[in-house]
Length: 234
Image (tube, rainbow, N blue to C red; front, side):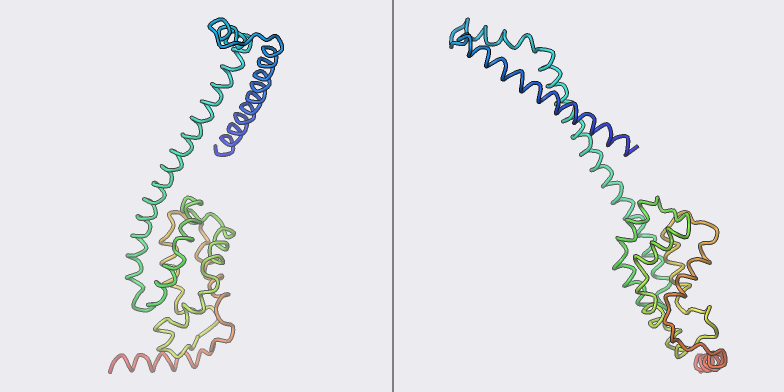
């Protein structure tokens, strides 16, 4: 649709340019002819002769004026359409933002700083999702969204997770993350449609962005978990 509109705009502009050039040539020819014949004077007959000279190019001038009017009308329509689209986009952003704000409340206890960074990249994320009609259809789209907005933030999310801090940063295995559930909850809450394997792909992306020197030791993790549970019972 957009591509077809651009072609039509280009075609109309091309026709307009041709008509303007031809009309300019016609005007020059008219004035040259009148000057050459000394046919113009500031009298009723002279003005009548001057206006009559335009008659032979009447169709050309009419077409030029009509094309200019059509092009200006198209430009006004384009401006009005863009203004309407901007309003619709802003309204959609307000609705989308409201949903995300509610989700922020639910992850704030374990990941208090995740909200801050999400807010910072939120509008760029929204623009990407808006262009995709809030649908992530494949791994390529997911990877682009993730890398553009969150690739450099994952280690920060993980380190600032309260459970990560409480457990001393110990991991039972390399497939574990303290902050992934909160991140998944926020990101997938931003879209309307996803593809079947998005959770698997998202976790793979998230884990690959974690620090490679984290403490992966199942015994250390079990000891830290036991200690954490004892502290909660006190």
